[in-house]
Image (cartoon, rainbow, N blue to C red; front, side):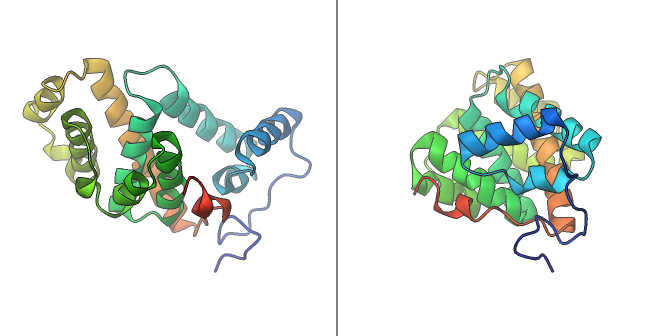
Length: 190
C-alpha cells in the first residue's frame, strides 16, 4: 500500500540531492502548479528515466500542435478513464476543468466523455483515442478519414495517436506502481 508521503507503493526514493537541473525543474513546477506532481517525484529515483518521461510529455502535451492543450488533455482523460488510471483521471481531469473553465466538462470526461457537450471534431478525436485504447489493431482508413472529415490534418492524427499511446503506457505504469495523485488536484478548478 502507498504511504501518504510516497508517490507510489514502491520503495524508490528520489535522489537526494537532486541534480541542479532537476531541482530547477521541480522548483518551476512548485511555483507554477503549487506542487511537484507525484509522477515526477516517482520518476526522480532515476534521472535518465525522469528526463525521458518529461521530454516526451512536454513534447506531446506542450509543443506546437494543431490540437489545443485542452484537446490533448481531453485525450489524456478519455484514455485514462478507459484504463481506470486513478492518478491520471484525477490529474488530467483537473487540467480539463482548468483549461476549459468548465468543472462539469472535467467531470464528464472522467466519467463518460460521451455525456459531455462536445463538438463534432472533439467527438471524432476522442472516439479515435478510445479505439486506439481498446482495439488499436482495428484502426482502419475509415477511422482516419472520419478525422479528416472533421478538418483534422495528417499531423493532427499523428498527434492524437501519440498522445493516446503515451497515456496508455503511463496509465499502466501508474496503476502497476500504485501511483497516487497529489491531493491538491482534487480541489483545482472547481
